[in-house]
Amino acid sequence: MATKKTSMFTLTERVTIPLGGGGTDVFATIDLGSYVDVGDRQAIQVLGADLIFQGATPAADVVGAIGNGHEVKLQMTDLNRGALVFADDRALVASGQLTIDSNGGVSRDVDLYPDNFGKGSDDGRYVVNDTLYLTANATNAITDINVTVRVDAQIVSLTAKDFMAIAIQSTAADN
Image 1 (cartoon, rainbow, N blue to C red):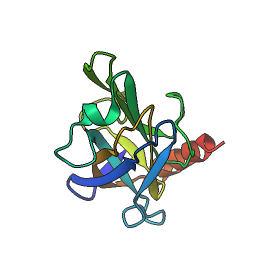
Image 2: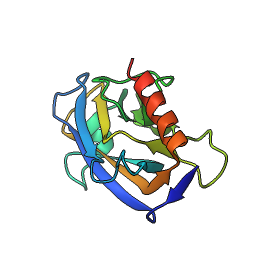
Image 3: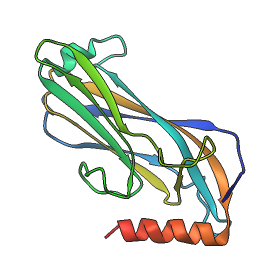
């Protein structure tokens, strides 16, 4: 389906949920315009996405920043939805959350890893759009909460049929 044009590389972006920003969606983007080329059928293959949750500073206590009984969610999509989406949305690339229970216990879930329904280790999520969109939300923000997304990706060249199929699916998901 795809021919690798590069080795794996990492793209990063950080979303900051401000003090008092609980319940409000916060947005950021990862620009892929330099990597995606329709004429050459060049796409990004997302191999993995890691979410890193931190407080106001890298050394700050994230549990204290969120507070007991609250959670932080982040989703990465290849279409701009403007809000958190359900898991059946075809634009969803990766998703995760950090939950602090009422006793200060921490649990971290990544509920969708890029294309985890693939056939093997060479599979990943192919993106033909020129932007990845990040949406974060916290139920509480005692101080700033930072969520960093580290996306492992590579540039691939697709056959004309494969590129067209992915572009049509992405357009259909826009509805």
